[in-house]
Length: 132
Image (cartoon, rainbow, N blue to C red):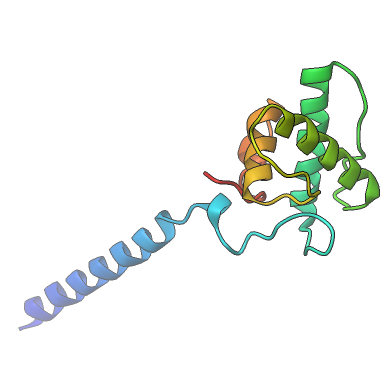
């Protein structure tokens, strides 16, 4: 009788662990709908804003070999918006996306990560909304 109770308890515990593990393991942070957009009138998580700033600076250095940079302070403001719009205008001219709006949603987040060449892409992929 005791053996039967212990066996059933072990089966229930294993099933619960598998269910919890599957629920946690299938979450993909970058497509998580709880990730907010970045831009004017958005929640603007400090890490996400820093990622936009870092990705812009890395992209600008890689593609234009210049040092037009935006402060990497994690604060959304007019300079960060201007930099993001410059990025969108340039990348969209490559035919990737049609709209310059100064907002980082899934499309812009994906483009920032793909075009920046930044070593911080894995970190930023957890804070920026993307299409991945």
